[in-house]
Length: 492
Image 1: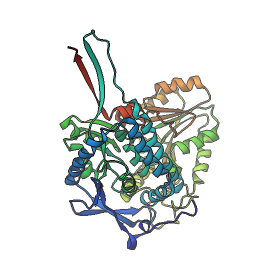
Image 2: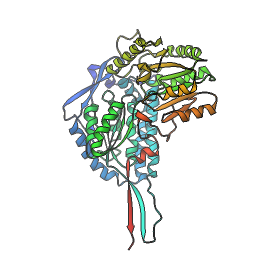
Image 3: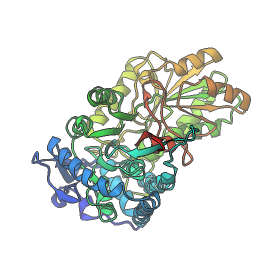
Image 4: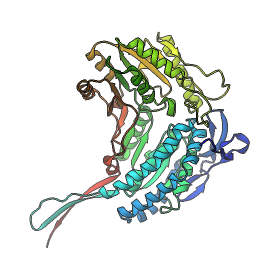
């Protein structure tokens, strides 16, 4: 990996590449006629431009998708699987390229993006393998009647992804494809490059127009996808306010939605733990080394029992302070920059609020002194945090850990659940009876016990409360891209 070269498209300004969007199997500029700069978060330099799309581009992608769907729907599950495997094979041959492309476009460090680039083809294979599970049901009937159900694809579906894992999330077109649909992919406006090159890699495998990649902003391209009357299934990963806006717009045509939204996830640490293991688990669960805490499943609220509170904090701060902040291209870098200026400013504002409201800043919270440019923030640990503070209530989506002290079991359960979110939770104790009892009390869609951050293939992922609707990664995800039809035949 140390030998990876940076291509001209990954350099700054003078050699910046003008990407086009992929619509109907063709590369084109947007009909709006404007572009969006893609900025390297490590140095704030423009590395590329992408088209700034709009309603007309989405409408064209829908028409192309309808034509491709007419062919794709006739493919057997085995044939769809074969085509998706062909795509996964290509992806596996270009892991280093896509990892580095995401590094310069998103700011995530190389070690994390190599992992993402390996998981992306696995996502394609996972759903390709499920394609044969699109089964109907038969019913017991009188001798002169037959009754059964079939599952049918919607036609053209939409997939809207965020900036934190650009290439890996581009592979989330997989369930829509496996179910027999055409897919319009809208990447994050600040991280569109790997999605566009993913589309290029796939375009000669599938029917022309089966995958379109339409770039642009959420309030234009994203909204156009949601409001288009012929896109009846939309999946979105992002913030709660945007998810709410999508629900309002989707109501006009009764669209089927899956929404993977925010989290303010608790980690509850009991006094019997191995403190070294628990602090390592806290850092891993925060996704600091992989995406600077820019993950909806990060355990950003850490509830530590008073008996080990001081020891835990001392060990955590020591470990966090040693995390290497640097150029994300370097394979020794653990912490890179956050994704864009607006996001950087918001995180710094929340750090300031923590100090103003009385939390104790033990490490981090500033731009590293060695960087004049770039959206770098030293990984941050606050203690003496109370549940009323903004840093304990709002999703920061950055490298900020808030540590809270607890002594009473019922109180900590109430505090852990005392948020509008319910995505994940993390429990640390050697008492597995206590761990599982606590897991049942957590209002969260995924609970880890004595571990963090990993999911086996096929395990459903999705939240409670304001953290979203529906599940991803499992059979129910695949089935959600189909409609069920009942057929009753009266035999003559």
